[in-house]
Amino acid sequence: MEKKILVKNNPIIAAVRDVSLIEKAVLSPVETIFLMSGDIFTVEHCVEESRKNNKSIFLHVDLIKGIANDREGIKYLSKKVKPDGIVSTKNQLIQAAKKEELLTVQHLFMIDTQAYENGIRNISTINPDAIEIMPGLMPRVIREFHEKIDCPIITAGLIKHPNEIREAVDAGAHGVAVGAPELWDYKTY
Image (cartoon, rainbow, N blue to C red):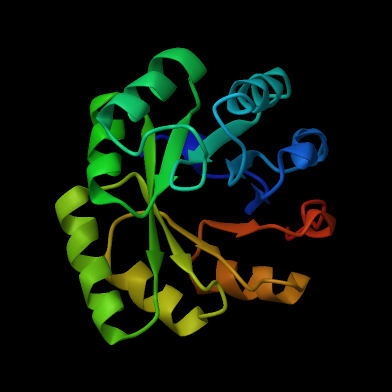
């Protein structure tokens, strides 16, 4: 997988839940941004700001308003907005983004054993560039995924303390998406 999605020096990914925080995210030491809010009118600005500051940006297309959750919406993003990639829970959007040569992050909710097993199956079928598993406070599950799949793992959700970031990375996560701006400056290395 292209290293652009992975962090080289800092595993923290800025999970931007409010577009007003894009400026803080692009000025922080993070290398990658997951934009989890906004709409058709704001995403282009967020991508431009990320580019100006040499940050990779992935749009969580399930959460962006005004972009259709279909192939045409993905094609529009690819041709007009030009993010590095997308994040989605939807297999068909991951497949459409891959056809448009966008990097893809499959978002998985690990709520029980069935979700875990379905996640493993989906990964081998869809073949995303990376996966994001939630919640991020599951070192054992992160280790198991790391052993079973050949795909970079990003964790997210419920992470509030620097030691939780370190635990996820130590368990095998390549990145940790955090929404708390005060953690974007945390040094894990």
